[in-house]
Length: 204
Image 1 (cartoon, rainbow, N blue to C red):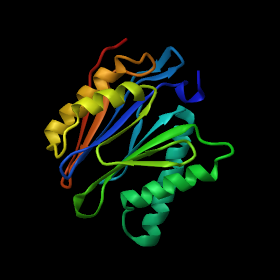
Image 2 (image 1 turned 135 degrees about the horizontal axis):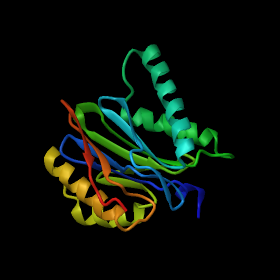
Image 3 (image 1 turned 90 degrees about the vertical axis):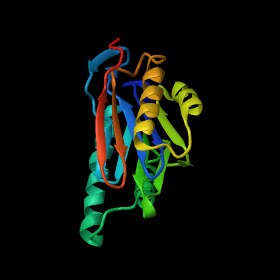
Image 4 (image 1 turned 90 degrees about the horizontal axis):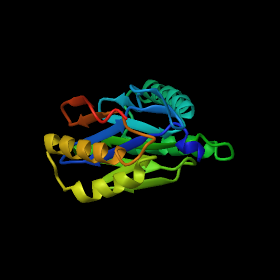
């Protein structure tokens, strides 16, 4: 078992029409033993920017604290919120800085940029970015998430349809992975509002 799979995780971000959704499972485990069923993987940087961290939970929490600290410094200096592209560059630089003893995390970043254009990206543990125009996935359930998202994704979905699509993709994928699951946590972000929902899934 790889160190990335130690705690188990499932993360997916998907774009819609001037909106995006980011979703994760809620299980925290130590290999096959479940420790918690309400674990928070997705964090809010500001109202238009969210990111999730899959991989080793301890490194995810450390990295989250460092990123929040960096963003607050940016806000103080620039007097504005960070754009998603800028934040992705910051995460990438932070991870590459530690490339010889990396954080065992795979981040997923999703945000609304200029003119409410959705931006999503993921990267590996040393900060190599992977940009996408439809969806990005990460975690131990990533293989089944690719298949589910590939078959369910449509362009220019409205927020409600996007929520339904990303939720079905997540729930069907974690059923095929024994290291992630126990329900889901979904954020749907539009230019005017943020909707947070908790999904109930199979509790096994």
